[in-house]
Length: 101
Image (cartoon, rainbow, N blue to C red; front, top):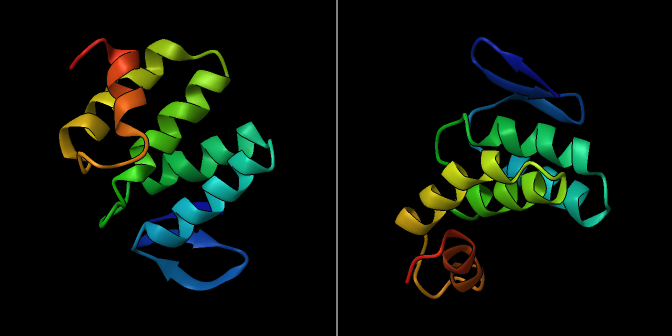
């Protein structure tokens, strides 16, 4: 996976990705497998793209927090809370972490 001028290229996906969903899903898979550096790479790339699934912000913040980088996670949590669906299973936890209602 690497940033190309016209989008993100993934050696496992043919062509250039301009939608963040496939990249986000790879990041989530890495996160669930315990590969935090790999998850961070994919999720950081995904949030720079167009059409970012809103949960991507949560997963990126969660990855950063697991890496002990809590301060870096805050803007991503704020973006998730501002844009995320109120019924998201992650919303209550994101608000608790940020100390907002």
